[in-house]
Image (tube, rainbow, N blue to C red; front, side):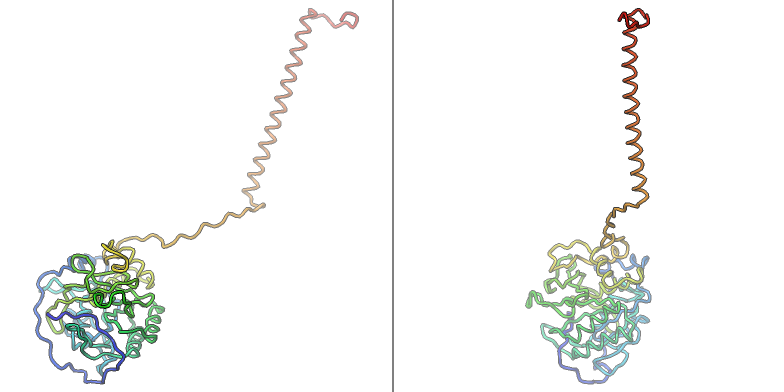
Length: 390
């Protein structure tokens, strides 16, 4: 079994070669059961909410074999920045086809494997055929300028709403970074693999996953623990299955692959579902929803990002507002009718209290005077007062 990992773009431009592949792909066996990742992500369960219908996902990779059975009718015309095949609908190494199948492979009667977003439209863009086999990079690759042009084409002419980058560069490029930022500014969600060199390049940032606004995706094994090859860092936004993953093979049948190359398309497919279910989401809102609904990670932020991708929660949970508007300050207005009414009521209460106090005092004095008169009257036997006989 050949384990296909992340493509690496170098700076040397590829020669212009014929469009046809050198050889036909070997016939692969059909996977009869339901892959473990499909059992967890449950695309048939997701279909009641969204299938990614009509959402255009650009797979910038090694091209996509449009003749693969489960991708039939799902691959639109793309472009080729590596060879002279101007459709991008051909894949001589299989990497792009495998990535695209995780996103949009249709259900089939002879297998339990299918993509998470079988209604999505794949826009194939060929830029690299470089693979890493047994630790060695082999195959042709495009230049950073070609890579940047491929991203711009996917946005401007490919009408992509999502861009999947299951590849990394050996160094940063201002051209590529500018193209990625233009894509995000245009409202396109960009998803990129985190890289597969955690064991020999620990702590190394990968590009373009580390560009601000890009959703960087790491890999976990079937047990949910970070795959030992998955690179770590603060650029990892979340993780998805990426070890022992089933994918459609170039030509026919299925193959087993591993790498963050194959974690990224699970996220891209989920993004397609979200854009169908919640039209108008911005790239930042998509990332917020993915992270807010991710399952809690078994380790640190640098290893797992916000956690493990959970497409069902992402589609169904109601999120609280990111931030509540601050309460408006209370302004004292001397002409406020309510304040004036309150002041009038208080003044009236004060006047009534004074009036009752005055009346009460008068009654007390009147009673005291009456008591004095009665006592004197009794003393005189109720005789008229005589100044001569006091």
